[in-house]
Length: 162
Image (cartoon, helix red, strand yellow):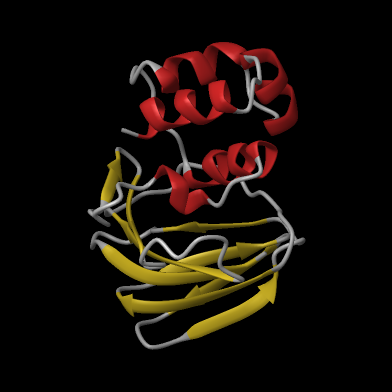
């Protein structure tokens, strides 16, 4: 689903795989595999791709607001398809022991609220452990990522501003 939509938008913008790959800091082969459904895309890559294409990440979600699953995470867009919102809420589910992914940065601010489990949030070089009911607000220009170092699935809300 994400790959098909990605290719549609890239073609609409008259952008080559090379141009998009260079702008998003990913390889051409990776983008090609994502478009063909042969590779999954992380939330960090999706955000970078969205920025280069000039679209909101919610564009890649199904219009009926069904959750999207990738091997490393499961997320649900909570914008209700509002075009160009000033902030973007996403419900993220990370399976047990999920520690793949590299820290990334983007414009705006980010708010994280843990609904279930224990989330490890990395901001720059700092590791912050958040329990159920705890939250963190930070500048998204700092490199950041989230991990699940526990044996239980965790769910958390991420709200990003533009």
